Image (tube, rainbow, N blue to C red; front, side):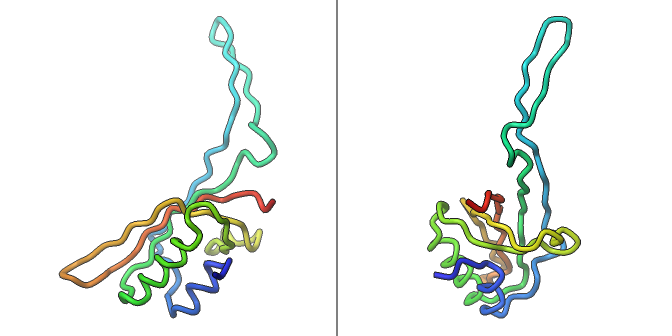
Length: 124
């Protein structure tokens, strides 16, 4: 089992993920509320701002889809793998991710694409 989504995608002959792939960061914040509308906020740990991506590959073959699905299935939603975010977000290089689910699209019996929500995880 490869630990690199980038290497697996390259070996399957996949194009770069679709430009419709989306990312976000939603920092984990601890909030203590007080009377009069006052509140105190602090980050929840050193890794409170990890990224999330919905990565989509469009117009892929059935073999490519099965290859990707097997990669995610082998990691079982528990084992981390590496992936490099698309430019310009790739300045930090390779990071660790986990995929808890994935979905695909069919059109007329032909597999069109796969979307995978990736959750960034600390390297340790």
